Image 1 (cartoon, rainbow, N blue to C red):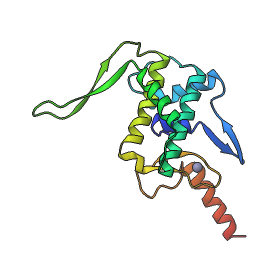
Image 2: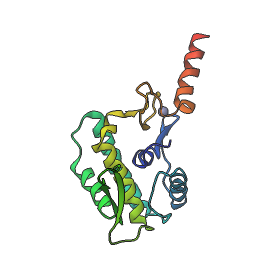
Image 3: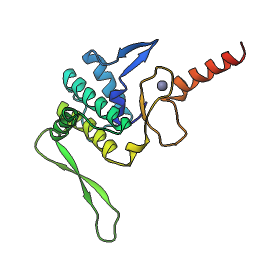
Length: 183
Ligand SMILES: [Zn+2]
């Protein structure tokens, strides 16, 4: 949906026709998902090396538990917090704030040990987007789609947004309403 990578990752589990669907069950599906995230500029500073599928699925489970906790107002499962921090700490870089006198603040990427073109760097970038979302002002804008049965999350930049996507649930709900009215 073009949400922060952490939210996009959690959204790879959805519901279709009342049944849960997992969009990340093969390495090929994972590569395609990563390709879309990279193409959308969502994973800055990492290469295209694919992490291991089981690591991505573990990170997804942890982030999903934290998004759910954020919507409920906590508490967060300690295991999920530890897992996200573990993936974040394994990255090859971290952002450092630089604010020169008379200048504007900027983020400078500091390289540490490790390879930025690695699966660990990709996992760290996704974990970091989740940390920034949960620890920042955007947490208050986190929503779950109001479409019947829909489980997708999004960050509402507009307070009136109710659907994961107007093309998907927004349209479905409008069509159902129209149908009921005209029957
Ligand atoms: Zn939806």
